[in-house]
Length: 373
Image 1: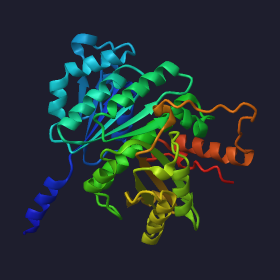
Image 2 (image 1 turned 120 degrees about the vertical axis):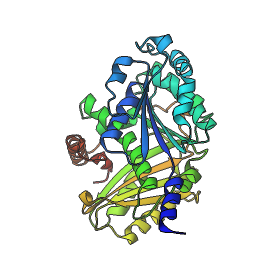
Image 3 (image 1 turned 60 degrees about the horizontal axis):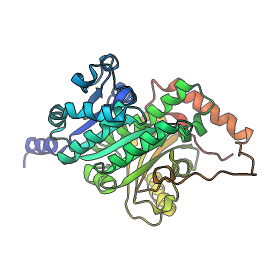
Image 4 (image 1 turned 60 degrees about the vertical axis):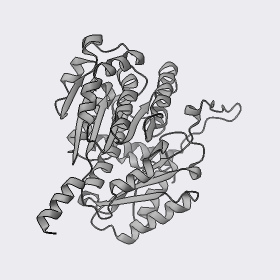
């Protein structure tokens, strides 16, 4: 086989990746991803609101959902109307997703357009044979009606999605509660966007330790509900510290991490990161989740992270009390726990530093989620 033939084989074997942002929140996240220069993927923005969609200038393709039904005015927060709007564009959606191997569906659940349209896109993804991964945020605890809509949407998604990565805004509040609302929600956008971008870059670009499409499929296919955690460490034990943070602070309430179906780890470090450190990370994860052998990981060098290591852990096949309809226990006599001052101050400073650096860096320093002193 000649080198030219090998390069052609490589080109044809590279998975086709499509990222679809649905509704206002989903489209905003795809803008974040586009700004960070997604490698090897197509970005689609879809919404019923023509005004908001018109601002999505960085997407490769825009789809105005339900032009006849909604007339470009949105769907008023009704998921049923969002689903009808998506079905109106069914032929166009099928054409755009044809040939896709890996499909990311991004949305903020609880409203109308994204909540109603995402199950429709998921069913098309299943129809074209793509590995379909939904990355969604769910509303704060006080937004009871919107959380009910989000729960119904996730149940509908489960029928056609291989895996659903869920970020609970209420959990986000625990680590970004002192930030202004706009900046705190930007953290959620960055987390979802970074997950999509990191995975896409890792399976389409050379890395220190490659994660290929088959590896991803083995973990995420029929993986059910997934939770994501971020960690960052420095110093002699930086890898152990980062992995511990990532596994101990998932942004979704889960009952028992040890019963997970699989774990996907993405490690990024400076040029001083060694292969031994990456191997130690894998061993530490196996200790934390002993009941599964489905652990895959990829590693990448980022010259800007000299002296530091950043870890993203995606735990698949977990049980979430909120999605199962199990009420959260309420403490009657015990006072509400507070974060010690010596922990709260550096944690807040890290979050504020992350917000200031958000336009330049690919992932937030919200990675510093540790509650250790």
